[in-house]
Length: 82
Ligand SMILES: [Zn+2]
Image 1 (cartoon, rainbow, N blue to C red):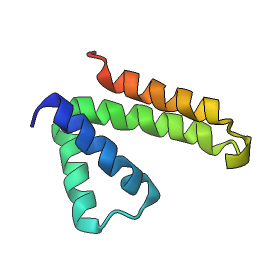
Image 2 (tube, rainbow, N blue to C red):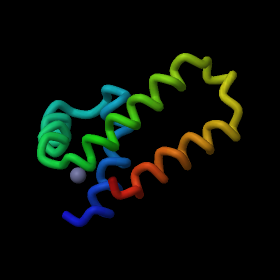
Image 3 (cartoon, rainbow, N blue to C red):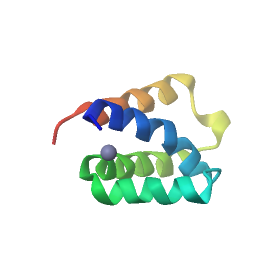
């Protein structure tokens, strides 16, 4: 799995994972991937940190501009080599 595909895979699954709507089997695969793939684990960690910050705000208090900034931030973090 290439790095780019990996991040796309993670982005696609992250929402379901965080929502708790991910089927148990898929969730196990996702967690297994996190153990095997440090870059994705770092991405998940930063995503969760960002998500927690956002959950402190009521949805109606999040300006669309901020939501876009956060998305851009998460995406730029995902693209960075550390
Ligand atoms: Zn990965």
